[in-house]
Image (tube, rainbow, N blue to C red; front, top):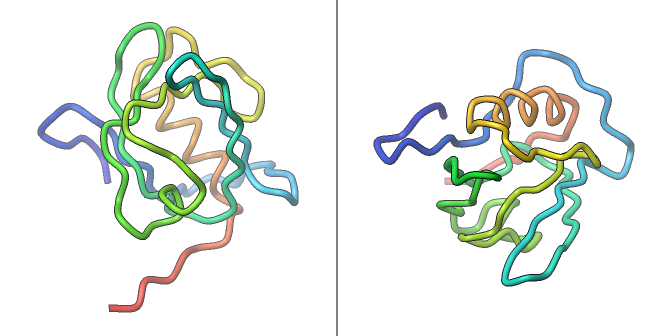
Length: 112
């Protein structure tokens, strides 16, 4: 997790506790002119993003991870986290917010 060579950020578990409703974390995306809400319930979320003003844009989705399973796709703009607009936020600000908001989500177990 952290910064990758293409200046994108990957979502990772947080150390801080967060208030996440029992249904999970609501992420609102804009893609191809359509707004969609995706509720995530596990961490790590399994996608990377990069800054593209005015919103961050999904740059990579890990195959088989939670983000792919719930419909997150490359090119989607993350426009809100739990109803809070992310307009003008940097990748670091979005990453910090997601780390806090996902702290109480169930951790996905990968079998290798």
